[in-house]
Length: 199
Image (cartoon, rainbow, N blue to C red):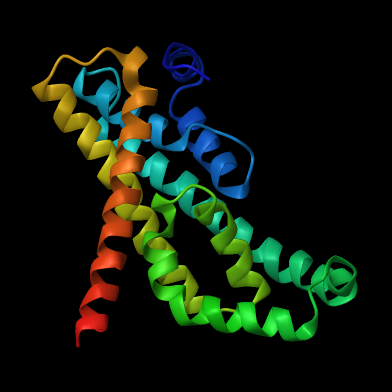
């Protein structure tokens, strides 16, 4: 979906479409999440959206998607795995191994996993399936949702006020930011491994 189509949807349906697109993107229905957030900031910089209301609707869309995924994992995913997991190679031992791995990294995953496509869709379901406690999940995903949405929207808002950006190029900006995040993450991981090796 291109930027012009997204803008048309926003003009037709208002802030609700921002909420809806982000909600669908989190629960696993394809939607242009990064591009949308950046575009929202860009439109706010041009005076076509209220920044405060756009931030609130974006946050609520992401956070409600995370909560929905969590309960989906807990009440649907867990029973399905218990009943049919062995038929798809998910033995109890494998499930336990994945649970331990997720639990070990759950804080980082729920706080920053939204920056990684695929992981942001899986993490709430896995948290529900593996029985993550309610309160830690709610607070971590609340913080993670705020960090992700505010980061992209404010970046779009700042660049929109600083540079003349054609909305048609917004999808490429989203891809570029994603690549930067992935490269930074990989570089940090490699650096840590080298430091451990030299110790």
